[in-house]
Image 1 (spheres, helix red, strand yellow):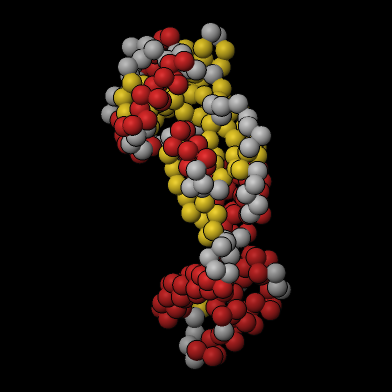
Image 2 (cartoon, one colour; image 1 turned 180 degrees about the horizontal axis):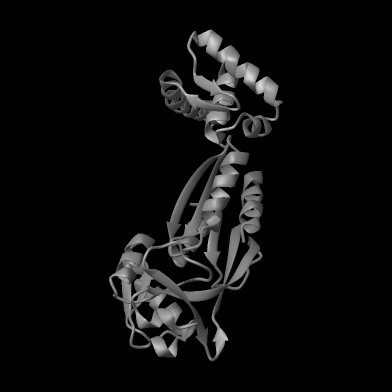
Length: 289
């Protein structure tokens, strides 16, 4: 019955027998027969068929919603059972830079979880120094971080991308109308940095020396707080290039000495850490950039 339930879920999700058949790698006639078999076993009609269209019956709508919860619990049960049988060793601990505003990391997590359901992901975030120390002291297996240090032979150093840096600014600010802005022209606008209190001074030093930012600095604990400060007109935040899917925020390319400011991001893990899932995650992550 479980396979039939998943066929039924696919049909409802896609609102199409033909699309569901492709998704489930069976013929359209076969998936239709499986749904009919499920209805006979339950003794109720799940779908009201009209020519080539269908609608859910009240029983079908109830069954669909409850079946999603049941299959989600079953998938989780199967993953946990495999993990327990292996002594919990299939856990990948990943750290990422909490100021990173792109969606590449989230996409990589989603793909890795789908392709490696037997591996439990333990995800942490922090400033550059916090993530580096987690990796150095064995608190995480892999770090996604900006590159502030020279590559070390102690680690596998996988360069992910060199990304143009922008600022995120309130769309109501006149600055949002510019095609680009220099760090010098931002000297009178506060710069918002995502940082813990004990790392705030270190982060200020980095952005002054590497980016050339001369502004007053304000601290935010996380990305959500920083963006609320931006929307409230409290300042700007350095961010990766590209569009931002945030209400009332605009990204403007950042330049220094008439050149785009760029940031290098990498995936790093210790050479002597032999977990195969580390390189698998790094490969998936790199493909997102």
